[in-house]
Image (cartoon, rainbow, N blue to C red; front, side, top):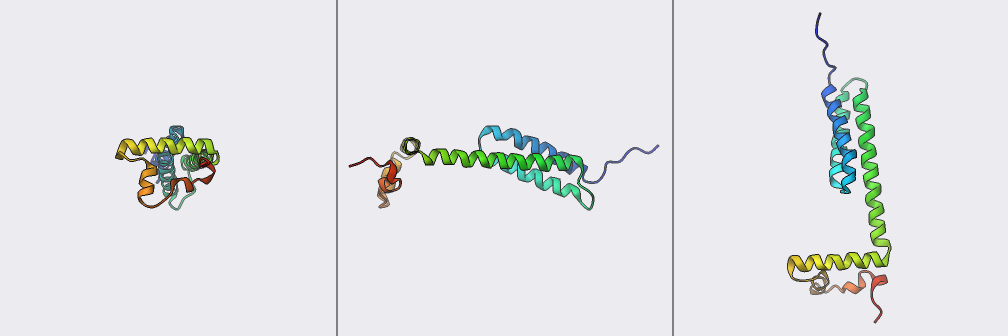
Length: 132
């Protein structure tokens, strides 16, 4: 009796599936880079596992899950971007938070930094500017 041999590329297929699961789980972190990185790596390994053969079940599952993770993550990112920049109140809250962060880091607010370059911060987002 000869021991069963693994088909070529099965290691890549298993790695693709594992990375796809990590990618879909990391969408819960609400970051863009981590799920997209693992998703692209999973797709790459899934396609590499194919070689000259038909795609294995693990590789196919890895491709589907990682593609889903990338699409879900980008959709959440686009929605978050839309929410922040579509509402004048939310945009003002974001700008105030950014001013505080810049002031803590550099001692100057983002408004003061922009003004030092000759940019009027009130003209960046005219719908949020206070009437004068």
